[in-house]
Image (tube, rainbow, N blue to C red; front, side):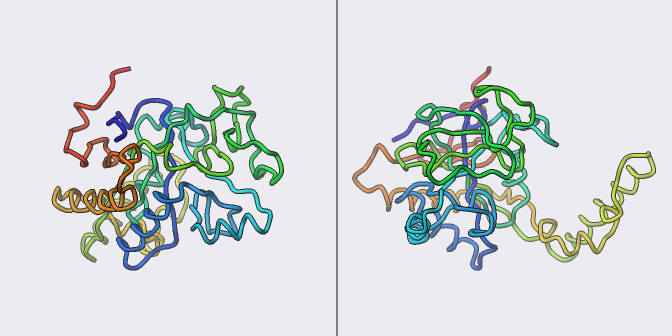
Length: 282
């Protein structure tokens, strides 16, 4: 089994599993996870093909992409190496908006980046060419500061890219977040709080757009209908569902058994260990 770790150490690499809004949530999530555990992070050909950056294809679709001659690319983040609006502000994985703002109970796959080599950055909008032959080389999707490999800062909406895939033997752990849907009353209360906050910021002369003070805008945004689940029983249930998939896929392969963490760094499986006991002081 892979060893427990501090998920928030600078330099940790992780890819967030993303998909269309599923129903039922858990079953779709687990199905996607099983595919990843069996086949690896297989990457995507383009935004248009799979609905968004970082969408992990199924094995069937991956075969189709290969047959069509597409380049496959896995998008991921490196903690402490982001720029753009956040300006390197991600000091912990729970600050990542792709895990924070999505109701679909997103999963992050931690993997060993030391096995790969960093190359020059790609420019924004330029996916790697299908015939560049650079397996095992990762790059910043764009490098806003123009820094050299090892120091490049990737724009936070895109992160880094590696081609063509990340195999399961490179996985170090799974990070999960579980959300719950607000009641209509809780939803309206949250909207009122958000609008009141933005109106006050506008009065103080800060740059706030009109839609950020519009209640209907927040009512139409599904992200404001969900908040993080903090019921320990629900969290343990989620961790056990993930662990069940890990054990099912990796029967007889102890080296591929990986620990399960929540987004705050607490380990839930194979044993419960609070983040305070895993945290590495840098």
